[in-house]
Length: 272
Image 1: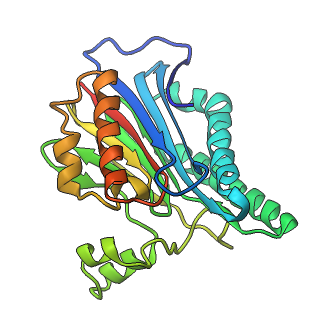
Image 2 (image 1 turned 90 degrees about the vertical axis):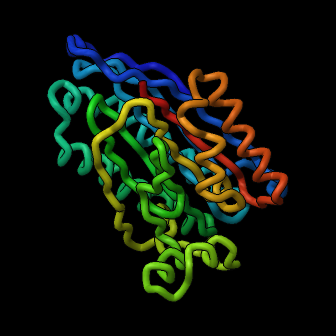
């Protein structure tokens, strides 16, 4: 599901609030027969004012089962949103409760997907990057190499890739530019469903107005630079859902022109 509104009973705060515009785009790409990326983005009406929950998963696995893995995680977070979010948003967000809830979803999904793969003799899994934007903060959980970015008057990668090339860059054995073009860039150190144990990263920070928060799969940024992403998705251009989708599709088209072989997906959230 690309976008929807959810209402959680209660009165929003009276002071001037942050508003959100959401958009999402996904494309099968040039080579693959199926799109194994899954994503969802929702504006939430809560007692603490409007919030946005977004999640993007890049599935992988034999017999096109990556789509099953990514969709399973999306459904699990949607169930958490329906059953567990209301008490968390009834008062100022309890970061510890939020993190524990999301980690438990991921641990459960890791076991479920691994069990499915073992019973069918296949290996499958998915990356996960999920974000909650409140009136003041962002909260992000990440496993794999799908990413979250903040675009203001810069393009800042918030998350850290759980990939072999990212590890080599952190050790000083490879430059970021070399990592972008290395043939081993798709080797993941962990993902949901294909790892014995998972260790999600957690990020939080203050949100900014007139800023774009972006989630994307690796197919969206393999063949384009951070500078190009910023030039094409500058917040000053993205003033409505229609042109957010238009600009996102322009980046996707550029990826395909440059012969990106993977599925290509992004979620965009504009604050104002």
